[in-house]
Amino acid sequence: MLERLDKRNLRNGLLFILPWIIGFLVLQIYPIGYSFYLGATEYSGFGRPLFTGLNNFKELFRDPLLSTTIYNTLFYTLMSVPIGIVVAIILALAMNQKVREVSVYRAVYYLPSILPVFALVFVWILFTNPQYGLLNRIFVALGLPFIDWIGDPRFTKPSLVILAQYGAGGPALIFLASLRSIPIDLYESADIDGAGVFRKFFHITLPMLSPIILYQIIMGLSGGLQVFTQAYIISGGARGGTVGSQNSLFFYVLYIYQNAFKYSKMGYAACLSVLFFTVSVAIAMGVFRWGRSWVSYDT
Image (cartoon, rainbow, N blue to C red):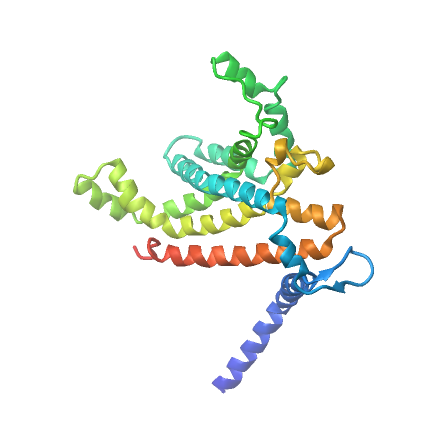
């Protein structure tokens, strides 16, 4: 009787998750497999793909723009991810304080993270405009040097890193939930032992937040490596093949987009996607392995 009940529960469970399984296979697994196939073809998006073997992968090593896109993407990701985690933790600590109207502050902190990216980018362009932007007016009033945030190649990527922090409200709420789940007994014991604020933070708070930090690192790396919208808008849709000042905003995913939809090189774009997928999986596995040495799941 118990075995029949287990089989029925298994059948019902599979029926409930069947739409997700179909969506996962059709919208995730199939496109990945088809990209591997297209990467070995010459295809313009029309007609039938022409199988060319490893020609596209050989062209990767001769592509002068590939190294530029990889450098720009890694530079942005390695700056935005750690800064974003630090900002999110600071916001979470601020939202965890027992002050009046703290719920209003939480809503204000979270609001920018739910706004569309393109809206934030347009506001940032106006805010940093070298002619009438408010940011440079503030800099000049304070006696600081004038900076062309969206035209000077030295500052275009740092500018996007700053812009990315407008979305720190979402991760901050996750950190806030984790902060509120830390047992108060730990802090009370630390107070009895005479521990100060910084000692409690580094020896209690951070270790207890380590699983969430690992999660945010994974999500941050995923979002940083796929940066596209900000650069596409600031560069005006990549007109003329130049993305940002001196290609300083020429990111990897934007290069895939150009090859696929601007140059009609679907096969080469799929080859770039395969490389991106492989490297992303390797980075994720490496981060998970690295996390074993510092992530604590016990109280």
